[in-house]
Image (cartoon, rainbow, N blue to C red; front, side):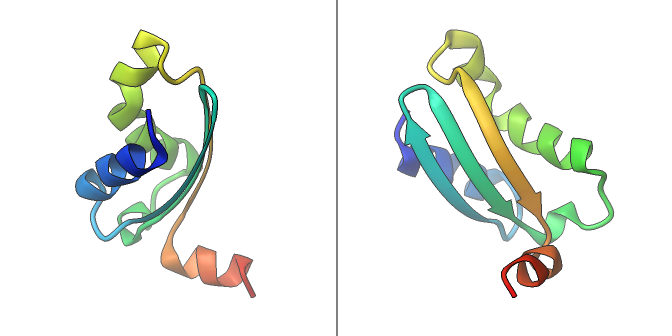
Length: 80
């Protein structure tokens, strides 16, 4: 699965999200920033993203996903 496909998939399902994707073989690295994550635990944020990739993970197209899931506020604190 191409990085652009993953980015489009996530951005179309998680409101106002901005997604950075790096694909290395069957390993996917994500940074997902969205106000939809506000008030959610880290596990709940990751579950939102994993739910979108279930089919690709089950088929083996994606073997591993490493992700950071942040609200815009968390992202701005991290990058400053």
